[in-house]
Length: 217
Length: 217
DNA sequence: TGACCCAAACTGTAGTACAGTTCAACTGTA
DNA sequence: TACAGTTGAACTGTACTACAGTTTGGGTCA
Image (cartoon, rainbow over all chains, first blue to last red; front, side):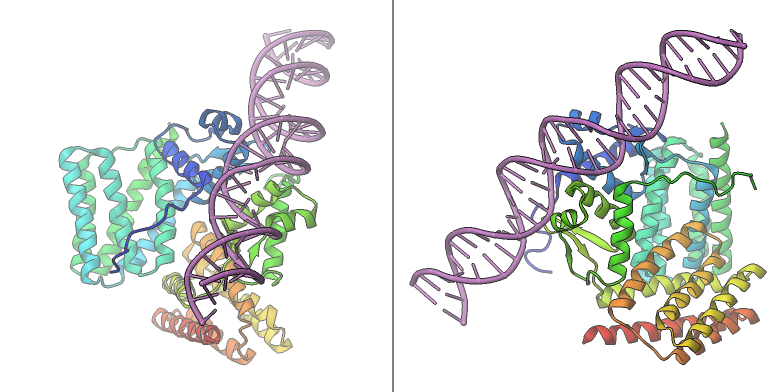
């Protein structure tokens, strides 16, 4: 570790900051799914030029939270059964592949820690934190694959998923969440690959089913 | 199938067309790795406004061929040992997970077809087409996962990889390429998952090694 | 040789303008 | 009343201009 570790010049652009800010707002629900991001309005409100907003939104597009439609501009993504299914299918493939590998100690520790945090959050009834740690748990599982590219890909999907969970205001009972993750963790700990795969599949099936039910209303 | 299937109005913007065009040019080697895309020069040459070019380049960024550096603008990505390794690691994880699944007939057919095309191209000594069909072969393997999201992710990586292969002007003997893919195809056909996994690992190890050797010069 | 400085080139951002598109409200008609 | 047609406001896509701040590739000077 260098003495200068962590020291870094502030190196960012207005557009990047705007993108980050907008991303936060969208995640927080300031814009609902399907909403258009009107450039002039945002530009005026934030006191920046419209082209800067356009750039910010293009950067936002990288995260997958908005997509561009010709002559309609940026539109916040909206969950559909197909999209949710596609998202969870990809998750299932990655996570089941991941648990076939034998965890290194620090990897197992990371997963265990995430589980403990889910348990804590559940005890406190902090639903936002439950979701957060839930996703961290699965990210830690994917990390078993030892692939930065797949980690990044999964993180991007997580961002999308978190947004869907937010707008659908999905809420299982905390006990269920803890129980479902405990069986996965146990299977991983025991090195029982088949069972881990089965539990992940079950967990994901349940989630998809619940989300689609929410969506149908 | 609707009677209107496939009918679609041409709906694209100048920026999108520019992004497509630039992408092609980069893939064709008009810009080398590490090159900067100078906005004013491109804008002047193509007779469009600079902000339109900026937008086009932001769109390009989505494909991963360029990345933005503050105050330096868009820079064409350059291969490094780390990046190549990360790319191939992700490929290895996906492809080995894929061959654990039992192919449906049409999937097996797609893989076989890609292999036949590699063989054809090899016979004709058409190296560009060998690379193209090689990548198609692997895309067909990933398709075994039945996940559109992962297909898209892999396609994006393929684009990046194709560029690296191009700039490194990698060239194995066509016979080697055919031989390596034949053993993979055979293992898949026989339903021998372990052997398919092993062959894919071997294939990828060889590729990484060759590329890094090229890179060291 | 190396530190320093400078000007050219370029990016990031602002601001204005306008043609073309979308969309919702309004109008007229059967 | 239902529907086709029209209109206008709002908004996007694109162009153009401008300028401050940053990078960069020389020079200059010690």
